[in-house]
Length: 350
Image 1 (cartoon, one colour):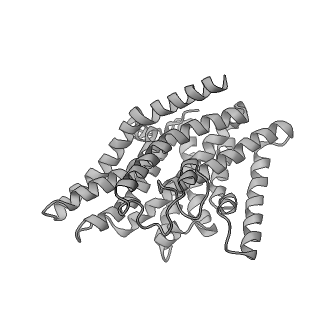
Image 2 (tube, one colour):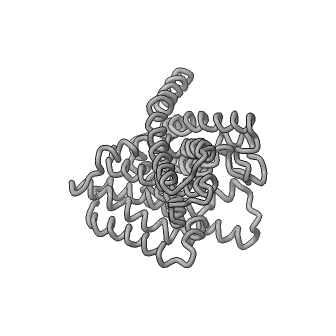
């Protein structure tokens, strides 16, 4: 099921995250000039939108696929482009160890980074922390596919049991200790509820439920804006991935995703072609944008003169370059690597 509005939302999510990182790059290399407001940092919540979208997509394909085909498709989509960008970071860290992930308290584990295994620190490619959660989602969803065929329980029933298990385990573990092993921390993380919420939306759409599309979409946007405007410290709210974050930020995104999909199904509003194109490249944009922004920032720092107009140009170039690099990467890196890996794995399993 290809839904243009979902691709449009992916583009929004990727660029929101890009902007949240661009404000850090601007502060680092701008020599005192700064045009992006502090609340642009809230773009980090684009990750929440990605999680809701991911759950939605999984629920739309779960009934028509085997668990091993599901994992095969997910793995060959996620890993090849991720390995490419992780390797770029690894090479850069070997050539210039002081400028790559220099803020890390502990150096990332290589094997855990490459295979997206939870660790106490972020992966070598820092944005890979979200993919660690994605891979956990996929493993759980593969298990749900198996259980749905073995036991006569519907998808919502399994999603409900999954959600209740996460809440119960999270509360129980935190009541005993705060030193939680990384794997357990991911398995019981509140962010998983955003993925589950997206899956519920996908189930409703599969059942042809698309009522109240505009109120849901508009209400989600208004709710998200209200949360950010009324929060005492919106930046802290965006960064703290706790239950409050999931309730106040994840819930509005749930309505936004449902509303956007329902609007398209009802023929009321469809994302423009250019936004869909950016959405198609959103995975590449997400993986590579920090590398692009950092490179442009270092070049900008070498320029002899900095002023307000140069700063505006710098921001525009960064946003444009991040998206253009994503489009190019999707065409010459992401797609070929995915096609090649699927053919190779298919030939090996044949």
